[in-house]
Image (tube, rainbow, N blue to C red):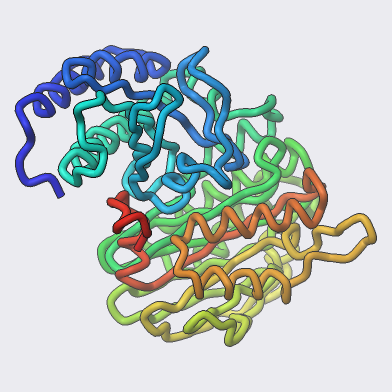
Length: 414
């Protein structure tokens, strides 16, 4: 952490804050350039595309997209650590992660003047502080500006995708002893899958949903499901009552028998007590000490919707007491049912094996899911035909810390 700002850096931060109130989101790069120019620094902002394959420059004409895999820029993004490297003109460069809270947005390339020591940890800490401020501004301005959304796209997005992405919370959140990350595929055509969460000081609620149907119809079903779940949760109801609220909302809004599968869960962050229910959805997998130990399928009910209101549903909940470091992996059926050219499914066993490898490598939760999603896409040899959603929850103080931007440790990441 920065204990005392150099006057030049202090001035730069004040300049960014002063300019931020009225500036358009697509001018963030110009604003940062002007603020850091007196220090002799030349910054450039790159944002990750929706499929998390490339880092795309925010400013037009600032260069080609950079691959996330196999580059220093990508490694800074993957692990949330500052990395030092070289520039085309021989000057040194710092690649600084852009992280808003725990949400990975991209990286900032900072080209240094010849006299500046690129390995100075104080310099890196100052860059991290400015990058954190810019990341907050990027998220704030994204609601006011189309250019930021377009910068994150490698191709057009469907109407259903536009609807769903506007309803979802950030892909990553951290709390006291909690790390939660999610990923959705196909990024531009997702329609019926969704996730949700609410993280407080001592409790975390999280959920995954998969609506029947495709395209905009499924998106509308999912939007009603999310709204019903949130309204009941925010009124202080327990999981069975939240499930009933979803059933009622779907029945009231739609005359057919459409349904939504899902998992609702509530975790006590102090004791590790996890309570859950599974509504016609693939059960979550519990990973402990890097190994899958069981599926959480103690209580199963009908999928949410009209049919569930016609048959009495279980009133009890499944319960599990987590140990520090435990991970809960939730997934939709589009993940395990993805087929390769020969018709072989990706399968639960393959998913669990990859999750175990990621746990052994102590990768941050969002990077674990990014790699899992890419493995599913590679198995399919291209775009997925069905929505595929993954959610990873880890009850661990160290897991939460791994979500934060930090300095690389002598070239190695913690």
